Length: 140
Image 1 (cartoon, rainbow, N blue to C red):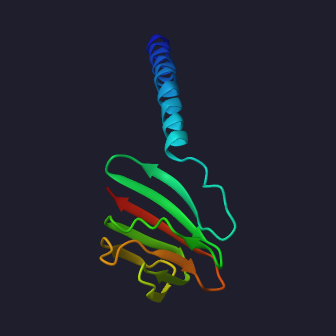
Image 2: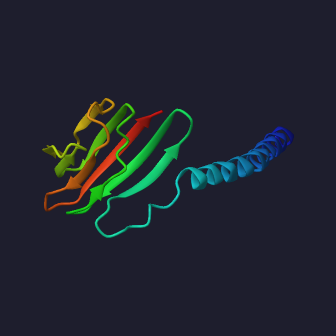
């Protein structure tokens, strides 16, 4: 009995040590990938919304966009299909190249599928009193 217990304990300890040796480098690689894929949020400029790229590859780009009251986004990805989920709702306004303005409200939890803009590139401005935060998946 003692001999089988020692054998079992030896195998268990060996398996544990092997898992630590294998998992260590794998975890380090994952952390390196995360650091590369999630750079810090764009430097906040007064009056401009901030975009934090959470993931980017040849198929999709995932962005967290934050608009403080009065902030504008002049980089809206209007030529791609995209999915937008509102984390914090508020009132936004689109301004098209021809000067046309469109005011709309986004509610917390709202999910929208946006097709490429037919009216060309537009800017988005937070015209409300609250911060608006969106999670955006852009298909490439």
